[in-house]
Length: 489
Image 1: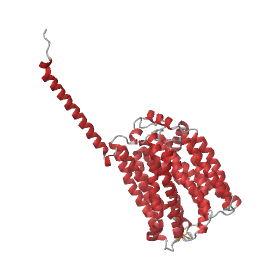
Image 2 (image 1 turned 180 degrees about the vertical axis):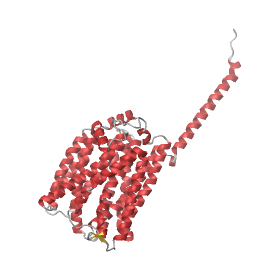
Image 3 (image 1 turned 90 degrees about the vertical axis):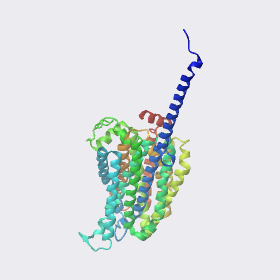
Image 4 (image 1 turned 30 degrees about the vertical axis):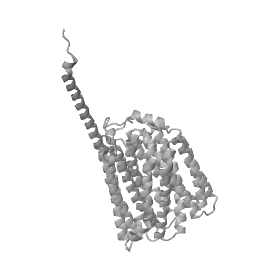
């Protein structure tokens, strides 16, 4: 038998090597082409692009809200358009939970029918339409003598507008965070959630510092109209984020439709009521129930501090436009401090600190602030504002970040249904429940002074500490959260 020599096979070997080189080059070119396609804007990966667009959407949303918040409070407390009774604010807050529940029911129906993107579009456009209508009504009626049942028509607007403004904001905000919690993993969320929140603080601070200018040029109604306009712009940015996620295969809607489209992991169908869904979900995920209770307690405390603040502010600064401008600067200061924490401190702190430990620190700080305030018979505006500033700063920076981190390792239902129930219903029930309690106590014992309200705030801060401690015992460590996230994906 004659074996072929190496020399005789050289042409064949060269041919094979050439084919391999061509194949490798083709594959390399394909990979490079794919990576170039995925790099997209400024060389960023698709997920990074989607996160940036959703962060921009949330920032525009908060920019508009920063116009609406001081404007609606100024209209609500105005002697011409609003209400002077000290019972008006708690009474209005008592209506926030029922309205929030109606909005939440509408959201869950839209989520079942249209998915996350459609639900966000429906809730955003619906809310913007209400604000546009309110702005036009105020502009039309503020100089009118028309009345109904002896009450000027203009006075029928501030109450419902205030209640709606308190109700819609969390519903829409939670949907932005639901998307971000679905896209990022636990490690990424611990690093980036604080700066993402920081971006909203920047736009909120800019808006707050310019409220006086906007109101002087456009009036309070114009500021509210501007809020609706910002919401429309935010929807455009959010739609871009969903478009990118859909193109590259990480749209959260796909996760929802991955299993049976009629039955969820909790066993309920899409036709089950909201409360039934929430009840089953809370039993399956105890962390959500603990978070629900923590939110009730924290928002009860925030409401008490807000009542003290609004009461003191209305007496200290009686002029409507000056009061709106003062509040704009006050909330701008909150956002500046929050921004510093979100960009400078929290991202680095969360690399070395477990979330459960930070959860426990927050209420301890507020126990000290409320105790100091309750020692004064008639606390000054500066002291009252400092307590609210501390609460809002902690809430917007550390607490918001920690809240959102809870959802990252959880499933779709927890992020898109449980989160809305906690984010909307618990937030508003905490405020409305405390407002109803204040109204009942006022009816029984008469109006409370600022010191008595401060005593109640101290008790509320102790209750917040208890619920926070219970929640922190259920919050996973960063390593545990990462393992849970990997299993769910």
